[in-house]
Image 1 (cartoon, one colour):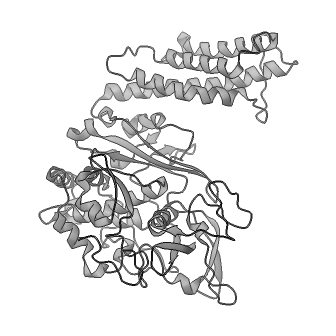
Image 2 (cartoon, rainbow, N blue to C red; image 1 turned 30 degrees about the vertical axis):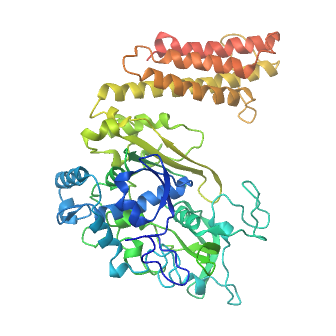
Image 3 (spheres, one colour; image 1 turned 180 degrees about the horizontal axis):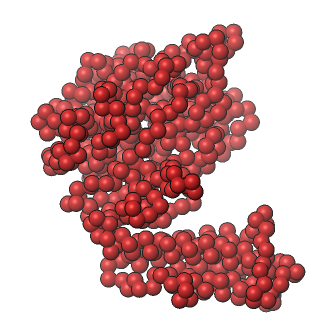
Length: 537
């Protein structure tokens, strides 16, 4: 499909051909492509460069089922339920697709040129705008029946909303909204559908009742992990989740742009693989309001899409952590936590740990493991309205260390991570105790005396020490995992890093103060105790 072909006259923005997805080519050049070009040239593309990580995370979940529709060997496609009945048959098909090295351009054109999808990829189509609900124009109205949009600032993540919203990333206020380019509006639309808030929202009237609250989006406050190859074609094929045994196989699979608009008041359709699993769990409904030429968005409606209980499903790109009650929940994003601290959760088998690694990292082709990295997209949020920080990170080629392929390295990573976490926890405690000793003259300094800490008064040394410790611990981690390194005592480098961080946090100016000197000595003793035989690796 040539650039410009298929664009809708009168202000349309056809995502098949409009250059809205930033990518980096394998030549090192940056470019923007539409969906058709992205799939046709996926083997020539090295990476996605969408600057909004929650949008990139959601986009990968949109691209994966499309890849499954397009990736084929003969008449068999990766989303074929008949092939998916046997996991070995499906893995064999995936291997044949990977060896082809690219998506078939004719298959790309056939999918995006389907008559039943006409207009479905247009961002501003009058009847079926992409991932939107045109009924909101009539349903999101005030008590007098006048349109009641949410505002463009509500759409764009990072902008303040409301009269008293904090101005943090630019002067965007609801009294003087700034339009957003259509391509960027598409990014934030995706981000809202996957990571949007719960609670109060723009009211939507379907019956006589105007409901004005909704549930959190399916990925809110979570972190996602993808196997990342040297080219986007391989990345997308590996992003197709393996067949899910819990899917409703008797129901045909569909993505939102492939089926009629759902009724907000009806039960949710059965969860099918892979389309509904990845793109059919939205809890929000949205509608963009563009200017006449379709180049920018000036307003938007954001409201609830359903109040039906969500389906329970294992997201294929998430780590599950064991809770205290024994059940598992998706690992929450933490903007202060570096990717290396999660590596053992990605490398070890589920039976070896209190975590469940993402299913998409299972059954990876062994021949590709030395080439594969892990891409992480996370959004540090609370469960309701507060957004803190989003992040993107990419590991080195560590998937070759998976337990099935290199058990020795997988266990070494686990040992190093355990030692680093244990030392970090002890550093936090030691720095708090040191502050208590240095500032409270009533503290009993005898060796066996217990020191009671006030969680409300941790003092400044703990945060300062940990800020210095974790980057140093990461450097030590990668040193320890270098080939040929001695690994008999992995704890000492982390304790040494913690001692240095503690000294820097306490500072040099206070060395003459006898109480500070005693505090430093006690804290260092707590850290050095980790190296005693009872606490060795």
